[in-house]
Amino acid sequence: MARKRANGEGSIRKRKDGRWEGRYTAGHDPNTGKPIYKNVLGKTQAEVKVKLKSAMEECEKVDIWKARQYTVGQWMEVWFTNYAAVKVRPSSHQTYRGYIDHHIKPYIGDIPLSKLTTLDLQKMYLSLLGNGRVERIESRKQPKGLSAKTVRNINQVISSAMTFAIQQRLLAADPTAGCALPKLEHKEMHTLTADQLAAFLREAKETGVYEMYYIELATGLRRGELLGLKWEDIDLGAGTIHVRRQVARIKGVIVEAPLKTKNSYRTVSVGADAVEILKRQKESSHDEYVFPSPAGGPISPDSVNNMLHRVLKRAGLPKLRFHDLRHTFATLALQNGVDVKTVSGMLGHYSAGFTLDTYAHVTTAAQKAAAETMSGVLSVTF
Image (cartoon, rainbow, N blue to C red; front, side, top):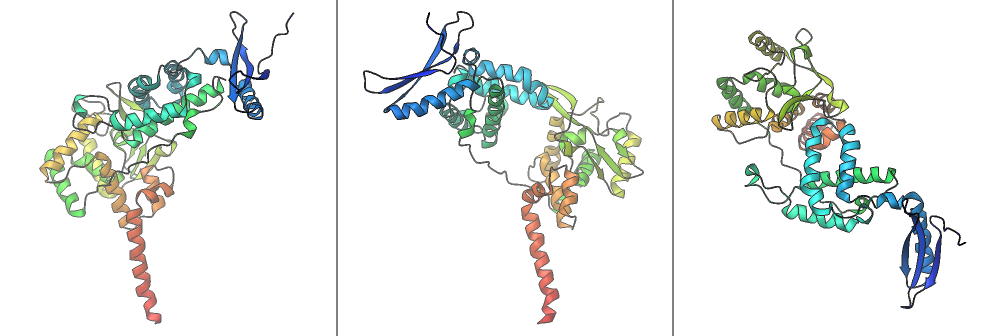
């Protein structure tokens, strides 16, 4: 009776076409017991020996039969349901779902998981950069290609799913590891000058939204963090705000969600003027939220954006993102002598180094001013 060849066991022979072939058993069909054979080819016996050894070593890491059960699209669903849904923040679920449904599945979903290559991914990323945007009414005037940041995010999602596949012995290596990714395009930072700030706050007062935008400019909170503030988070006596949650739109519903990172959970101090504004806001409010919607409860992040654009337009100011108000806070704080570490902590950044990189233009100007000051001080020694 013939001996059953063990997984990974191989043999080498010379083919009729002159090439050398290494053949090995990669596994067995659990239903029939029949072996699953795979092979490697080369011009010389020595080349095939090296290839065969490498292939058999990989075979030990992978359950070929299990791997054959999945296409890339099917595995992305398994990963999303069993890993991402538990590991990833709820506010990111909809984004990941969109990546899988609109980009990953249409391009590479039908490829067998075990056959996905770096080249397949590279071709997909190139197509997404050129023509990957989903057709929606609100995106008609936008470029047809996805941004470099979105493509990099998609690669990160696929990489996480491939790492999970490796852990489950479905793959020997992550095909995203060798991808050449597009460089990030840093958006130009826009901030309000002192004169523009005065015009903006005057118009905000006329429009009836002064309190919310003043607190934003005094703290630099992220939009969701500002909208998630409740009166229980405010200590008027100590002049502090405890940032504990954010408000986000998830699957079309406005909900409370955890903060972005552990550094986002922080306590921010505010000045006497901000305390007085909060006191007035509390006297006129009957809601648990500091800045509620007209109907009560959390206000929509989109409404706040639209409100901002109306105020800017009426004040005769250029259009800004809400995030630019956060940049305005940080820029003014640094320009007026607040140290980088303090600003970093107030912004909820993961490190002062990140803050330095983000606001390098401000700190560079401050360093030049310091150099001029020192030059003046030291000139007396000449």
